[in-house]
Image (tube, rainbow, N blue to C red; front, top):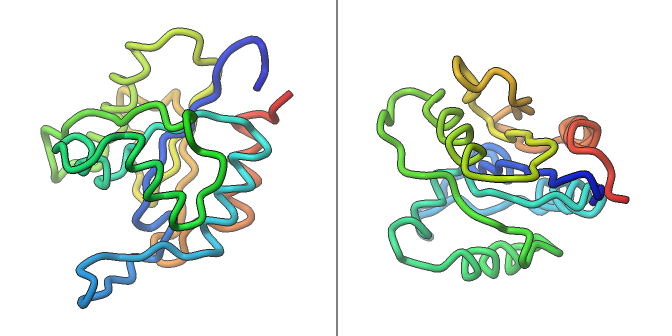
Amino acid sequence: MSRDGRAVLFLDIDGVLNGHEFDAKAESAGLRRDCVDRLNRVLDETGCEVVLSSAWRYMVLGGAMTLSGFGYLLRTHGVRNLGPRLVGTTGHDTQTEDPTERGRLVVAWLMGQCGVRRAVVLDDMAVCGEGSAHIPLVQTDGKTGLTDADADRLIALLGRAS
């Protein structure tokens, strides 16, 4: 990573690392390997830190698992080199029907940080509304998840690791 500060990726999971394919037997949506591979490319090429902004963050916020346990969960699904780069989660939603709430939570997280040079939100919803317009959003198609073009844009926005 560049010596002039941190690059942070705010990561959604549903619609980014999967296409919302719900498995009734597992009572969850699994991750798609092609999307995970693209995220790995972004992580490898940018050296960015990751903040979990997905609703999956409630596993950590609710106490079902630690942040490091969540990182391990992602590793079991093929996400490489995350380890200590998974640095936190955004907070609790207050307005669940407003997709821009996630953008406001991103801003709140950033306000408590020092040394962040670049931040990008990766989500399948238009979460960066008023109050967060200065934070770039790479919006995926929720049915296909993270594409090569999305990954290329993330790398350009986050910058390459030095």
